Image 1 (cartoon, rainbow over the protein chains, first blue to last red):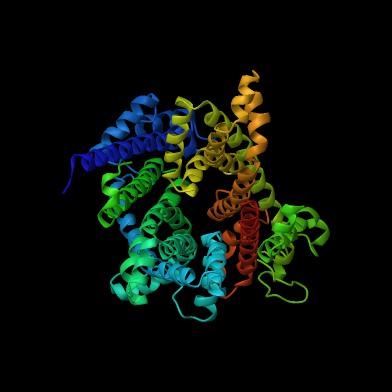
Image 2 (spheres, each protein chain N blue to C red):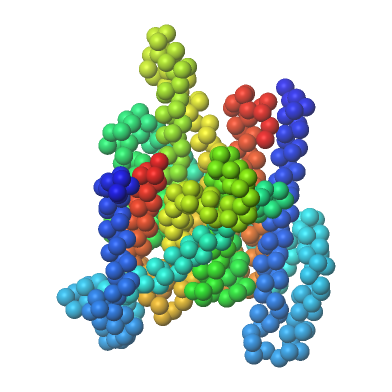
Length: 321
Length: 270
């Protein structure tokens, strides 16, 4: 049953997200088109002839007033037109879509490894509170969380790729390679992201478990004679893991940033390396479209997490943000 | 004294020792380096670790051991500078928005939401592409992104303090808002600010290192660790692991050290 209150909450949420996305587009536009000052000058360099600079600015449409440029850009974006790449002289959209697809695959591999691993570790830590397992998982996880992806990536390559030779170093496979082999090449690139996310998710899963284990309903379930396993699976886990979903969604932003570094390290042509390549080559339309996609992906994941929680937890349907 | 005793836990002591070690390297660098970190020696390029070069040499024969020691200085200059700058601005913003409320407060919340919707690295890239990469620009960009985040913590603490009796009491004494914010409230919210600063320092090191690796941070010929990895990681396949392995270990130890210190302070203050 969808009540008018739920509808109201959804509408409010949608409006706020649209506002955030709008502000984001202004920030991205300001960073990409206004901060460099003269776009053609920054592409052609300080020694270029003034007439050449003016001609290029005219050709790119970057000699218009800022507000007009912004409205033009957003207007085309709303129609699904992300603009023309300066570097490739062709539409940006196909590049972005192809890169998003590859990044999504890497993000999926990361999630498939990290979610069960960290939730499992959080549960183990909570059930052994204060013992060495707990300290190892909590402190170890937290320490790994702060190590930059390229640092853990290098160490993982040295150990698993060069020394033990268990995993392929390159993320790329020859065209025509089957999916299982492609996935095998993505394990090593996914691991640095796994290490970062592990600590956060395990910590929240642990906290949720601890709270649920101490709750009255757990005591009631135990006292009425249910088996321990039944108490844990039927009563504790269901309540314990709700906050974890929010945290996983919140870490999406982090994951997307991590992709820039990991994709560069492993030379994988995803959205992160696309943004970086565009940034290095001053391909502003490509960079802006890529960054906006990353922001939109984050906002979308936050909405999805809210909806998932509403589905799993009937209590939150009445409460609106 | 009580705080010091509460801090004396293995995690904090280990973290503090690691950080102290790197700070000493940063300060005393030139006295500790066996060779110049910039002197190339092409006849000895890519030499594996040996008695003459403990950590081996890089592509143009520079001594990696010396470069690791010297590499503590750039990162331990840029990251703390950015954190300090952000702390000053963030504390001022947080106090003002928390105490005054109103439209300024609403604006700050919206701003934070937009900034948090983008990964830190991406925001930094966006600005650094326009301004050009340099240590100064990296410092300013990181401070810019951290300011609203610190402001949010300070704002929350300020709102809590405003409900306590001493704030209305000061208002009744006809103290000015600046006096109330900076003389009355600020000393009481120092603990959460201290925690936020140490946590932010960890993230600042993380971000500076990552930006240097991507080519938008500290620039060559600096012996910065992230930069060292960027310059040499293509050599891994050839089996020259020492050119990047030690720099990676150094970075990892520094961030873990700072994080252990932050954890220790957080636990001690709670």
